[in-house]
Image (cartoon, rainbow, N blue to C red):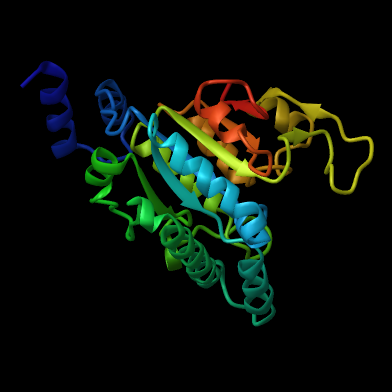
Length: 270
């Protein structure tokens, strides 16, 4: 047992889990990267899946092709149906934890549908927070599908305002990438990336190819392409220190991003 481990064990037996010296000793123990060769891809619910076969079928074909050279963890968003559920549940004055469960059910449905479309290619959907079968699937077929909603359920931390769950599928997919120590996190949306304003409603919106979290917040762009709390998670991350946002409606964008090209917008932790 090395000195660091011995010291940490002693402190764990004697101190509070929030003790500063204990936390410093725990910090000295390096994180183990579980899946360092894998990339997490988040397929947007409203931006891609809700558009139906015209948007999803070409992306499925691209996933099947690129998985020959890349190990992929494919997460699904919730989208329009979740927004409808949130509307009803918020009108009934239900709390964020209940809305979280409702949103998760839609992300689960999208994962099931994507899993069925990829089934003939040997790519399966996995369920549950542990994702215990992921290494086997990656070893055999280089890809697996999962539901992007983090499994907080009733334990969801309420937002500062309103009852919409603050940690949704963007956060869920990013947390998976970070905890598995993956090499990259790519968000597949229906826009070319981050803009100075909503390009769907603003004619003078300007494209931003690369930006830091602090710059986004300073410019008031923190809730324009990804969930706001996800940016806090990115700043605190140890392994995944940048994310990439690409337009999945443009054929080849995902392939280029996986190859390391600067496609869309790159958001950095610092």
